[in-house]
Image (cartoon, rainbow over all chains, first blue to last red; front, side, top):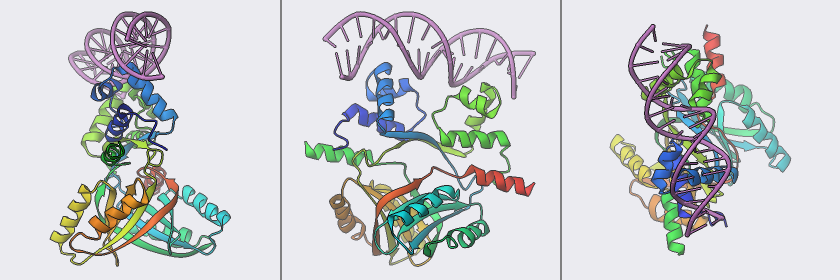
Length: 166
Length: 166
DNA sequence: CGTGAAACCGTCGCCCC
DNA sequence: GGGGCGACGGTTTCACG
């Protein structure tokens, strides 16, 4: 079971680095209550074990000129595994598509897209996405405003859950 | 117009820190072609100007025991601004809701949720989300698998666009 | 923006429990 | 097994040109 091999200090490290990924190791060590060397060893172990996939600056898309954010629901003609993979690979190559998730239910994929303006997005939509082979339907919804954008996972839920199991 | 006050070095800094938020300042300076002190000054300026909102470790939700990811489309009874704000504030207080975006079209909000398992999510769905006042309808879609999850914005699109304007 | 210097930090080897 | 101590080299971060 995942999560079992992590002790409370590891989880605190993950929570702290999720909240501030550029914290120095000594600050991190102070917060989790151990000295710097073992703290760094734990961080490296968590990175190598895949618990930490990377570190990213969270840049303000709007301030950078990406004024449009859109969710696109995509239905495919064929849901054979080979065709699904082809579509996913195509999404990875489209810069405007930031996220692509395969869903259950009537729609096959949900895409989160960004673009500098509506006309850029519409060109992408009509000339690339809708035009791609095997794409049956695309429904788009413009984001009017963002209300919450929390990174990663809720560690409070994790702790509650572990406390309840004990 | 946003983006105008940033020179090519600033954009390179943002792109590098988006790709690796824990890079040392000397490494960053080397990559953008200036020495460390002015590089650090630029980073601080970008942070204070809001271009960089923060830095976050990208943790693996599944490996941490969050096996369920769900998109929820929410329709409200009243779309008056006061009622929208109330709903948004409620989303901010729900740990399982990681993202909340207001949309145009038939659905009012899209929520990205995570949960340790389906029953945890279903409890949240029936006892909290659907039960909340002013919520008219909720349609959920389970994420079968993730195909792409790129952070932030595509800097190649930004550069293309600036090159075309010049 | 660059140089130099001082303080701090990341990292290693070793010892300890 | 993991944690702490001390020390070296690299880094951050000044003041100044």
